[in-house]
Amino acid sequence: MGDTQSSGAENMAQTSTTAERDARLVNARHGDVNPGEIAIGVIIGRTSEFFDFFVYAIASVIVFPRLLFPYVDPLTGTVYSFAIFAVAFIARPIGTLIFTEIDRAYGKSMKLTLALFLLGTSTVCIGFIPSYDQIGAGAVWALTLLRIGQGLALGGTWDGLASLLALNAPEKHRGWYAMIPQLGAPIGLIVASGLFAFFVGNLSAEDFFTWGWRYPFFVAFAINVVALFARLRIVVTPEYTHLFESRELQPTSVVTTWRHAGRQIITGAFAPLASFALFHMVTVFPLSWVFLYTEEGPARFLLIEAFAAVFGLIAIVLSGFIADRIGRRALLGGGAIAIAVFSGFAPAMLDAGFAGEMIFMIVGFILLGVSFGQSSGAVASSFRKTYRYTGSAITSDLAWLFGAGFAPLAALLLAGNFGLISAGAYLLSGAVCTLIALWVNQRLELER
Image 1 (cartoon, helix red, strand yellow):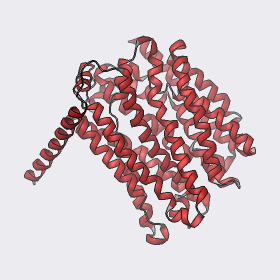
Image 2: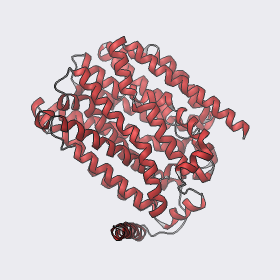
Image 3: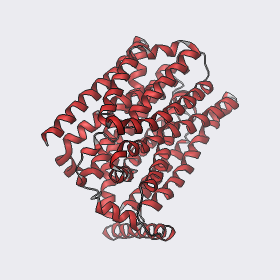
Image 4: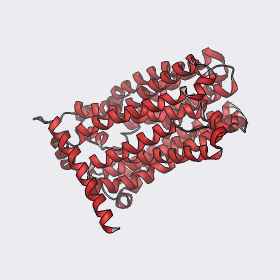
């Protein structure tokens, strides 16, 4: 057994060495590394991750309730589907723990290769899942296990490029560079929504639920392969290896990071709750509400989402300009207040027909873009360099878990039982948590 394990470790190390050597040969170049190159790698990586995210999220509303839970009413089926949706966010911190150790032992190329291979395999296998009518409860368990696989893999996709980008950004343009990683969210949503809208709008219901819904998952696998090579060719080149080392952006033990930066991790996880809660209030939740409680077909609303996401994309870019003038923390605080005001009346617009839906989505995406655009930078910058690489990964995991993992489930249960105004109350709670976390973080910095 020991020989087998040793042989496996040697093979992994050899694979990593080969990948690094090939990447360095392809990217042999001279001169300094500039932030623009890092930004390209960040955008490619984040777009692939968010595309996977939205492909699954859309399917959890319009496919899985019917495919896996035909024995219950549509609302209950969607609630069950959202429960499985949340499993990945619970698994994600565990994935970070596992892949951090792989990173420390074998390097970033090995970690990224294994993580993206697991993510792509889990995603493409979801596209082959049989229905409940074919294999019964086995289909539900298969989806749950594959969703866990996605969550574990997402914990390993942290490549440190976002932190590297923040550290190499010009002093007066930190807000601009902080928003770059967030561009992947609206780009991923636009592509995923457009793809699903095409299939659901051009196929019969029978064809769509038999095979049409599976194609976006196959596309996600292909995008993951492209993203893997795009990120490897940046991360493992000599210039970037030196830059990671010189900036002290090396993986540290999760336990050690918690011991030395636990307070920054907690405040960092809660600081973006307003934008993360709004994230699902304008993406997954409204699609489920419209699909369940109106006569509107999913294709039209998916196109509305894609259209509104363009406004979110523009707002993310603008957040960089604004943050460089007033500060990222001030922008997050102002965004949380605006989201709190929005929560008081906006959700009711989903019951106001096409015009109401458009207003809700466009305004919601503008607010989301402004706040989400800076959600990763305001608190992460407070980490000491030694713990920033692993600390940022843990903070991201917990922020998604607390702010997004259960958001569609909670909002749908509240709105289904108490009306849309209760979904607004859920959004308000996220805004309050953001304001408290920003205040605590400011106090912590004054104490340092």
